[in-house]
Amino acid sequence: MSAQNSFWEGKRVLVTGGAGFIGSHLVEALSQSNAELSVVDSFENGSQSNIESALGNVELIKGDLRDFDRCLDACKDVEIVLNLAAKVAGVAYNSKHPADMFRTNLKIGMNMLEAARLCEVERFLNVSSACVYRRDSPVPTTEDEAFVGDPEPSNLGYGWAKRVLELQARLYSQEYGMQVVNVRPFNSYGPRDHFDVEAGHVIPSLIKKITDGNNPLIVWGDGSQTRSFIYVEDTVRGMMLATERSMAEPINIGSPEEISIANLARLIISLTNSKTQVRFDTSRPSGQPRRCPDVTRAKSGLGFEAAVSLTEGLRKTINWYATDMNRVPIKAI
Image (cartoon, rainbow, N blue to C red):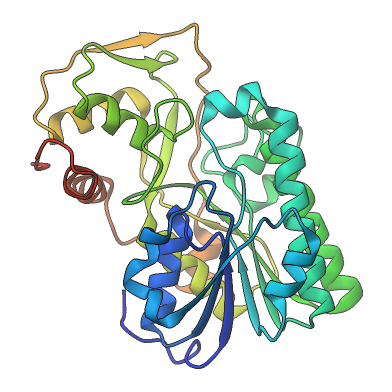
């Protein structure tokens, strides 16, 4: 990522959820672009250590954004809000707690957009999700598919929360003239993700299981379900470009590289030089059968394409997990 970007230089920018997985990488990139940064995070999932390299350039605020007054305080004197704060989890948690995922994410998002409006914030990035798309969306999936049918059942609460927040953003733009940008990141992965078997996403969960020596490796579903993964630095670059261009239409931020979960597990096993055997548990939810974005709008409107291949991104992630998490030293081959 480039060291500087003149658009951001001197801008007063608030990143919510900035101590979390994607947020911390965004904070690093903005710090390198000389933005005047503030970060608000509840630290339920994020960690101050995630933004240690940027702490000298960041005003750090601890706050629960379900509290509207905290949102107002955070938005004062801010020019741009990048709203990454959300409750996120893997398919296991999402399946068991749809109401909690809907309620919590809707409250955070609605609070932040209203606070930004009242504080006359100039530009607002609403981070939506690929979870807005239905189970049987055509693949590759265009942005126009977002409000067709219900979202994937295993992400129903989270997906509907993100849909409603996109609608809120659209209505605020219509009524109040706010510059609101909606991005839909597909499955992001990389360093500082949540390496948790129960609540984590598929890549960090698989890496943890394999490096912890789980044998056999139990993979949910039959392994035929596919995903498109995007390395976190590419996700951040796409978010920044979308905010700079202030695109009115929602935009997919992802990679066209699609892989089955079975082949993903085998690739991680190969990169870690593991002898783990794979077994599939078809009694467990597998989520959406296929997920891969149409990235035409990102390419034509932003000039954005994912730069890091899945194999290279997995190498970087595995090596980070081995060193930064003080695990048994391994090196992705």
